Length: 206
Image (tube, rainbow, N blue to C red):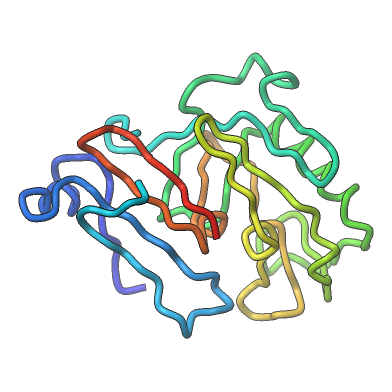
């Protein structure tokens, strides 16, 4: 990696520095890691697709994640930890981090939905749930229910291959140490736009 660009909502970010030319608007669409021969897109300025900045982070409110035919609802199951703007959408974070009680049940539902034995030797990935030689139909459909948007994930968002082996795929979700994050793997193949002037955000599907 050659460096990091700050696209946050602070006055020092690149978005703010370019605001006189493009306004405080940007959008991006990143390709999955298995298609790195195709360029990703980052656009400053007006775009039809337009996320609410709070201080220097962009926050979303995650309501729940149904896994396959099962409904996993954060509001009902974990009302004590539900709050507005409970997850940060962040390009610099690779995986999606879910609060520990929520993640534990989510992990259980994924294991139950995938009718294949997990791959035990997953130490190189640092992820807790990996499989070998999965078929696309083995991965259950998942939708992230946010306030204002339902984001239907593809298999590449949910369980991409790890970089050193296209045969091993790992669940791209983890438990956080503190803050929950909606990471860039789950955002790939979506056009995501930010409008800091109007303080909002919109997702456009695959």
